[in-house]
Length: 300
Image 1: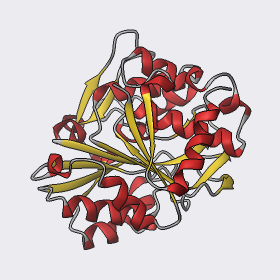
Image 2: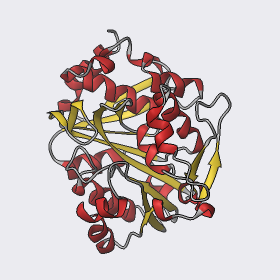
Image 3: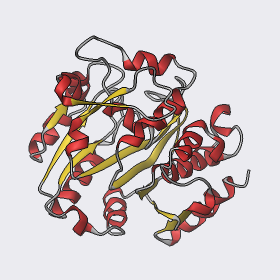
C-alpha cells in the first residue's frame, strides 16, 4: 500500500499544520507519552532551525489531541546545545507550554542505548537516546534544505542524527567525528533510522535552502508543508522540491531514489522505494499544481 504524503501549499502556517494534522487519526496520540524531535542543529534562523511558530503550533496541536505529556530532546551539531536552545528561545517557549526539554549532551551512559544494524557502516555502532526509545510515540518536525558537509540534503532522515550521542560518556568516542569523516555518511544517516518509527512527521518547507546549508545558504520560498509517517517518502518528495527550484549538483544527480540516503533506507526497509510507493495528496487546489510539478521530477 503506498505511503500517503499530504501536501499543503500556502503561507498560513497555522492553517497548514491544522489541516495536515486532520489527515491523521488524532486518537492515536490520546494519553500517549510523546517524544518530540525538532531541528536545532545551530542557532541560525529558519530554515536552519525549526521555525518558532511551527514548534509552538505543533506542540499545541498535540496537546489539543489529548496527549499525556510531551518531552523534547535535542542535540545540536554546530555549537553548544544548551546555548543554541537558549538563543533560539526554545526554553522560554517550552516552559510556557509546559514541555520539558532534555539536552541530550548531558545524558549519562544509562541514558543511551547502544545500537547497530547488520552491514552497518558505523565502526562500533552508535548510542541512541533512550528518551525516544521509551516514548509511546515519536513526532518529528524537519526543515527542507541542502547540506554542504556530505549529507547532500537534510530532512526527516537526517533529523535523526540529533538523537545520537556526539561523544560516548564512558570513553569519549566521537561518533559525530566518525560520521562526518566517513565517505559513507549518507548510508550511516539511514542506518540511525532503524532504531525507531515516527508516528507523525511534519516538514516545514515554507522557506528552503536550495544550496548551501545546513546553517545558511541560497533560499527559495516553496510555501509548502508536508506530513506523513514514511521518512523515505517525505525525503523523496523533498528532494523533488529542491530539484524543482534548482539545487546542488549532488542533489540533482541521477534519479531521486538513487540518492544514497534513500538507497540505504530502502535496503533497510524503512519505507518507499519508488514513486509507485508514494501517494502524494494535495489538500487544496493551490497544492495540486505543485503536486504535479513534484511528480514530474521523479521522471528525470
